[in-house]
Length: 206
Image (tube, rainbow, N blue to C red; front, side):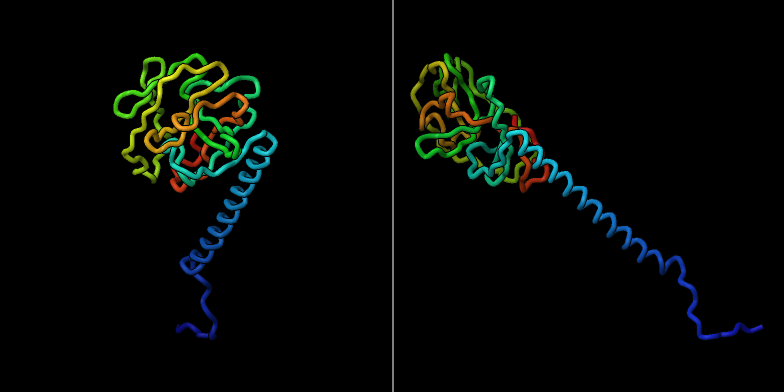
């Protein structure tokens, strides 16, 4: 018997329903992901505000590759409330009458002797200063120039710190403006919370 054609559309098959269903699921998943990210970001900044943390943008490459120009970092303002900075720590401090904030690495403390070494290196207590490996991959691969600076050897008085940038040949630091006093120290650089290189976001500053 021939089939009757009543002008009705056939019911949608699985193949016609699937794309629309997949799109709806994808949109819902995207919304949930966005809400989750927003929640964690908001929670982070509330935690940062209550934990005496400070967010700042780095404006130069003197600390590259540890921290490079344009990256944003979190500094702990209470890190040195009960102790002094130690060798190797990256600190936030005020410099000079301008009250500008600098971020540099402490390489020597009171009682240490700092002197220039061969090929633009820095010597502390007879040993060459070496820097930790950076976290992630910086997009600013060509951050170094070729200028080597000389400076006078000196023994640090108590309560002072000798600071330099990891990018030794392109850093305005204690070789130029002298020692940092304890009362100039404002905090410790803790982590990178934004970078154009995704592999560096969340990196702890060593």
